[in-house]
Length: 340
Image (cartoon, rainbow, N blue to C red; front, side, top):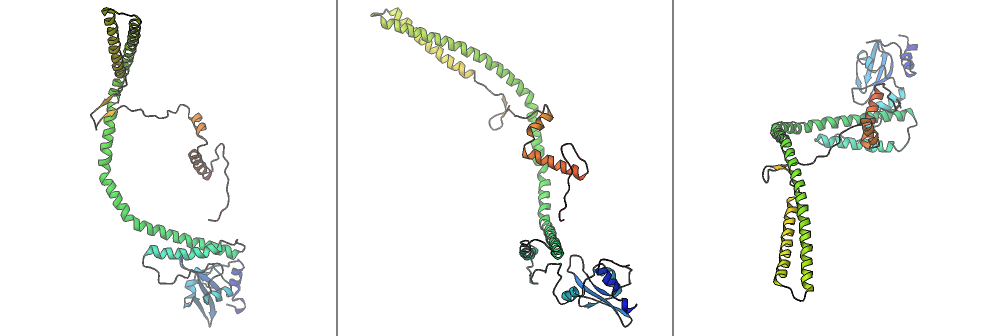
């Protein structure tokens, strides 16, 4: 290797022109690498005294082994120096200062980690992003917060799983004894529908006839009352009334009272009696259940179109069609770019 050209591969990489990359063929320069979901570590690779040397952070490492893990992440010498001295990375938020004495409880430990991140992010959000470094920091923060959310989801699942398993076990144990008797009860009631409906028809006919009879008796009672009132008035106008006239008056009054009582009884008999079966505490009777029979689906849909729940369903189906590339009547496929 020519010493005059020792840094060219790294300098080209910094300029965005990655040269050929071959396993076990390191190039001199400064880079960074990291394990999954771990902080970046600075890497230095150089050729000296006929041998390749490399440092990953403060640890010596084989240049050939580290090369393919770091070569796509070249950094400036200034960035390397800052990182090796503990100054972190300009494009990555500083790790929150939460120390190492975290609670043993995973929830409490993760809560502390989130609150530390939240404090820094809240301050960061107060200013607009104006540089690539800020954008990079925001991306890293978003990833770190997503990782916290993923950890919380996993820990929540682990903690909740025994309760879910026990809940399912209890549900499975009782499901048949809850649902099967209820289903049989419904079947028995449906089995009674035809009979009770026929009894209801008979009852309605009885009510019709009873109403006609009650009306007839009421008319007779009204006529008897009028006749009794006229007989009483006639006797009151006579200075003397014979025994027969007084007796006729009293008879008419008694007949009017009897017919009035009969009319009241007939009125009560004409009242509705709902068809039923069973006894007190276990009685089954016909009840009116109101439901909609759809006669014209398109007209009904038009009448319901302004309901929020209908709009929500339509938007869900339209978005599904848009993602599938299907443009339906009344919609257009749109797209926008958002950070994700």
